[in-house]
Length: 354
Image 1 (cartoon, rainbow, N blue to C red):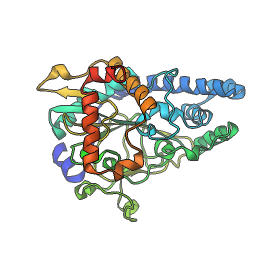
Image 2 (tube, rainbow, N blue to C red):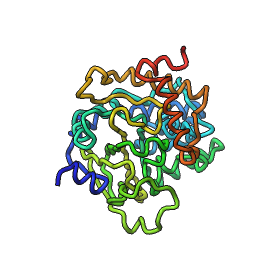
Image 3 (tube, rainbow, N blue to C red):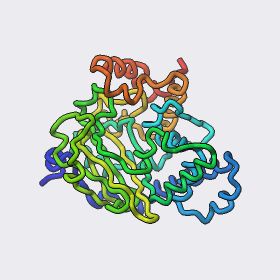
């Protein structure tokens, strides 16, 4: 069965060995590790934790990340994944921190082998959706460490709206429900790319095959999903492609000290509504107009900086809860407004400056 046929029949497809781990995965893994270490050290210095800093060099990556979660009161996630966290009332956008949209991430988003599979699934005119996520699923002991550090600075991480989704177990959901209603008929595909092995012990994806055929579904979901789910253990170099309407979750990380690290990037045919028009996407591949493709990672970063400055000042046009309650015409009006406000790369760079 072809990749395209399996994807459209099942709602997902796993492409084994699509990428070279050393050449394609390791550069982002190393660069992002440096970023996570820098953020952890900054937050620990800010909160005045000399004991932690003394031990810092001997800590593992998940321990350092846990320390940054606690010391930042969870707001390091706002910095690393603003796509979700900009909806949080206490959203913090800090330009003084090292930016999380680094060239190595942009390179993976635009990797020719990723785009080749997408071309087979949705055609040759491919937009990179503004929706992407960083997920690092921690082991129970690491989560306890984060809680202890948070408590020492008077914070409760359970109050962070999307905390569990990003570092703990992800419950059953479909991606489509997080986008404005005018995107529900868009051909949106999620490319889920692991940086580390994803196993049934450390938090791999679980999907419900063919569930995308039932259209957009909101909670409450059927109680038998856990029994029906198909686990998808994968290795670095593999990619899981998910239909925007397929039901999926992750198993909890029950390991002693392992962690599961992955990115997911969304794509759709150029011109279709993305569901999040108020944050910047870009043209990743266009066979008909290759001059419209964005190749410059620093322009992508600048678009995000301008956007986050603007949204911090003006606020998001809806709440996360409002997305699911909004009527179709209101959703279309928001999309039209933002398409006019920032129709292209230059429009995003001018945002708030006109």
